[in-house]
Structures are given as C-alpha cells and as structure tokens.
Image 1 (cartoon, rainbow, N blue to C red):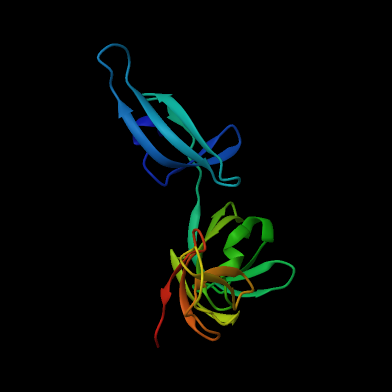
Image 2: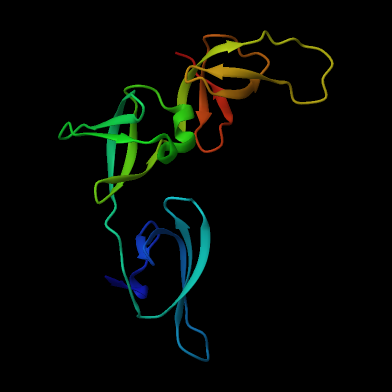
Length: 186
C-alpha cells in the first residue's frame, strides 16, 4: 500500500481487481479546496488509457510487477522464454505477446513483466535489426509518393522500405510502429 502522494511514473496499481500502470501524474494544490493527484493510467493487459483523480493522501494498492530480461527460445504453441539468471522457462501466449512477435527472433533478449508468476506483457528495445528476406526490385519512374515498397522481414512481418533496399539487407526497424529506420552496414 502506498498513498496517492507516493505515485511515480511506471508504478503499477491494483484498482478494482485490474492492473494499471501510471503513465503521468500531477500533484495539484488549488487555492481553494483540498489538494489532489491527477493521473493518466494505462491498463496493463488491454492497453486502454484512462484519467483518474485521487484525493491527496488516500491509500492506493500497488501491485508487485517483476520485470526480467529473458531470452526468447522457441514457439511451441506458445512463446517460450528463459530467465538467464536461474534458467527458469515460462510460456507466453500469442495474445499476451501481441505485435511484439512481428520483431522477435530466437535467442533475442526481451523484458518480460510478471505479476504473481503470470506474464503480463513483453517489451522489446525501441529498435531491432532484422534482415529483409524478400522484396521486389525497386524501379525508378513515375511515382507520386516518397518511393517505398513492401518488404518481408525474416520474422515474416511485412514493412515499407525505400526502393534501394534489396533482399538479404539488414535494416533497423522501430518496434513501436514498424517503421523503417535505416540500413545497417556490417
């Protein structure tokens, strides 16, 4: 248990049986009336964002969320991750993993958030380096756009890349929105 005055970004609260992560908070002391804390909360499971106001000093229940760096091993109906410190393995469902699977390769390290032993979500670094397995040759010519074409990554996910990108080229990809960030030279 903590008070509303102790709230910080990244803290996870247990409100009405659901887990909410604090995205933003602001302590407000109006000239008239009692002080309060205005927060922006994101539901850990659904990703829904909500605004909530707490009176200053009231008790709020905090949840114990354990964030661990784990190595992705393989997909066997579920995504299997291994904790590198104690070699414990957990299975994460495709629903929990979500869009992260589009950028996840075997033996890659990701941050897995656990609450009471149950995986809540998986986070990758902001960008990853992946190889283009297939893309059509880029043709220069009449176009009204910036000149992009679809390309398939080694994970099977498709992104838009510039026309000069060829097969077997390593590219940097933003894991938050799937944008092409640049070519990687080795």
